[in-house]
Length: 594
Figure (spheres, helix red, strand yellow):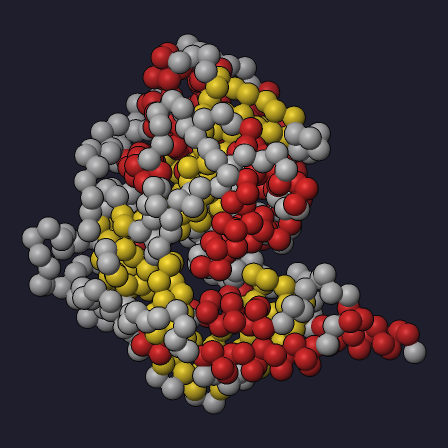
């Protein structure tokens, strides 16, 4: 299942920057809208010519610190400077490591771990962060000096000649979200980036020089990086970005930026972002929004909920939202980001399958009214790469409608993990067993660790192998249990539930951690009633008897630096009894009042 896309990696994507600087020098390349300085948004544009000059300046400064192939960590806020730094490292022939600022709540230890693992030779940052970055480096275990290059104090160098790079050369290290394990950096080559950006472009069916990317996703995140920086380079289009915090503080800003563009727009975000739009954009804020020009609202990076797609369409159809705009996608950092997505010209496919059959590894379609019906969203078909569903034990391809591990083969698959030969071999060098047809490559294949199946030519993703809860021989997908739990009682905060398995005297038992909904005052919260509602719903819908249910206080559910649910970290906190429960909070409150 590999729709042709021609040659996608003839030249590194960075070579296109100079082309656009010559062909369309004065046209807008990127815009950053700063809501930190102005709550209405202060917009700063940079043209292709200005961008090229600034990128060359940063590249020249980097080459004064080291040679091509060395690692350059980018520790900077969401900004035009971040884009300049990322592209500057490419012009210098160096390998960038896109990271976040030290003030990202709860992730300083992760930042230090990545800096240690990448062994960066220098750090790109801004003047405002320089002292904090030096402090961070001094606290790390690095035993050698690391240069700090301040991007916003470097003059353009339009005459500096970029380093020649090949498609096979490493472009950057994309560190996976991780949870409790040490982060791993996927080695993304220039060819990987070029291929994946063109694959996404083909999936989105954009218009060269006209369509605009509007993004808020963090640039250190794989989807944010490729969609915001990679896509515009393919055909000389422009992109508008803002800080993720600006979106979280006021979600309507995302839609306002989309509405302000005059041509077709493309955007992307995880499922929880669309939930936020539905929940937090008021009817008053919808007045004046025009979403009719948004061609693609890509939904990916975490499981896509059918209810979210339906609620989003209903909430914003009055604003001109096309029924074909919402688009479910599947991808991962090890494949650069994109693997497959639904059509940009048709509404997303939602089908119902028998939950009991899914638990046995078979996708059996059923009527939506059937008692065991569960809805799944299709993630379309791949473009320019091959995707197979494989039995993870035998390595034989699974027939259609049978669940197996999703394997990927294509020019977008990363070179492996930085400095981890063992993990690289087990993840990136899989081989299919004999019996494949001539059109299917024997290997190497990327083992994604995700489960799914083919139905009617489209890929359906059912969950992660490592997250499966196996009880009495049946497979239970944690996200299904989490959705059931959050819908069971309004006292639970949506998208903040973690279901996982624990060992109970040699057998697996199911546990749920759920955050209290902060919209319900503590004094009106009844943890026992919430627990009973969840236990009843989980038993009715999944035939499971929960071993434990814990209602935790807001902030108690751990998420990764990119906003994904970190089930492994939640499980570790539970086993270590390191959770702040609502029952304990109520007890303290009652004791203080006596």
